Length: 164
Image 1 (cartoon, rainbow, N blue to C red):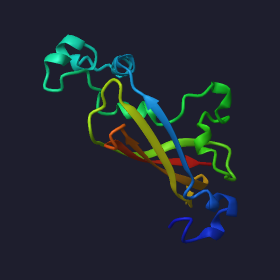
Image 2: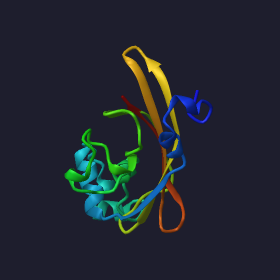
Image 3: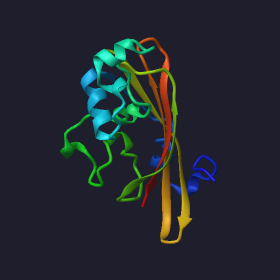
Image 4: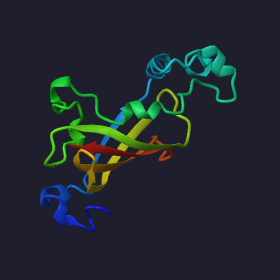
């Protein structure tokens, strides 16, 4: 059951947030790709060895499949995050005080390479309330599309955040 079907279960300002769009742009560097690969413990030389990558079928360094996950939210100072650590893009007017990440699906498209300009387009797709064992929970569903400078989709994610 979604908020769009039962809006009386949520405050009107919460329902009004459905469809909210935010967007930012990120220019990918070889250093970004290398640091991401190191952070996730992936030793594949395609992600950090220029010479090896040049000799590969890709002709250059490429990013690991889930690299775009690191670009999902704007890079902001810690003091601009919500009290629960979530970025401002998820600051939906809800009668809750905490949120955690829930389910997520991630689809990988075109390869990401150094120099790519990635546009991160986010939309709040749905907000709904459900009763859980410990009380009511409010779910915020966020759809994110990552496209490069050529308009190619490099990744898509649909993530649900659980608010309480």
